[in-house]
Image 1 (spheres, protein in one colour):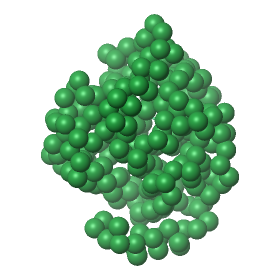
Image 2 (tube, protein in one colour):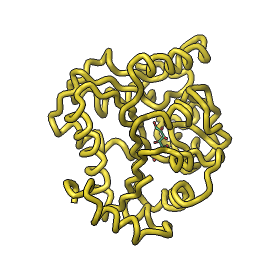
Image 3 (cartoon, helix red, strand yellow):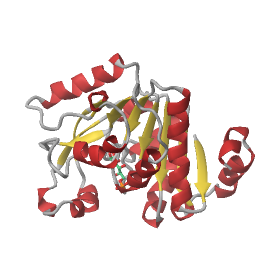
Image 4 (cartoon, protein in one colour):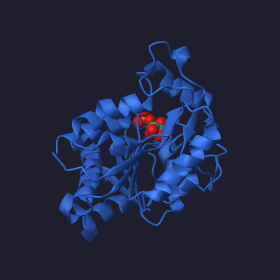
Amino acid sequence: MEVIIRPNRQSATSLTARLLADHVIKKPTSVLGLATGRTMEEVYDDVASMNLDFTFCKSFNLDEYVGMKPTDINSYRYYMNKHLFSKINIPIGNTYLPNGAADDLPEACRDYEQNIIDNGGIDIQLLGIGRTGHIGFNEPLSALYSRTREKALTPITYAQNSPLFDNPEDMPKRALTMGVGTILEAKRVILLATGTEKAEILAKAIEGPITSMISATALQLHPAATIICDEEAAELLGEKEYYRWIFQNEPEWAPYR
Ligand code: F6R
């Protein structure tokens, strides 16, 4: 795991966008793992402004609410079309999200996993982090080997996301989410966290013990995980000086300094 601290949200966001862009430039047939949420909106704005060629890319999103039709303005399909897919040239048929409106949810989850495998696996996975430490919607008690499945959301996540609904009570209490095991199989993982409200959980995720109670701690097991945060989210990290040193001295970061 590497931790990169940037001075503010804008520079953390634009570094994340550049890493994704560089991946697509190097491998135009990239299979992208994508996240939704407030943190990603500016990343997608940046990515969209770069005029990259996504013609041969595929994408798989982390999660979708159960019972949510793709046309619902609160669905993650709607979010992705609005914030990214309508602004880049990816063929919409190359973009996948778990089917939260399926009649048979376990079957939809199995199909989703198979589709990822059939496309060669995820090359680069973007992640945010929720206040419970979830990645995707892997709430506490998510097995570290879990696969795409239905998961009950916590009251904390409900409080985090329900204000985004016109009527907060319309927020579903369950979601389909890639599992922790699914995420750990992505070849590269980039987690972006910004703002003081993420500081406490980010410190636990990076420097705390690995536990299924905080699914982001599983990234400590990943061979190529990069955590990008701003100074606010980094506030409670114990090894900040070391992380800053990595960005200033490691050759791989030279193009981004
Ligand atoms: C979204 C997702 C979640 C969010 C997390 C942070 O697809 O999988 O894990 O990344 O809840 O959300 P924001 O960015 O709104 O704080």
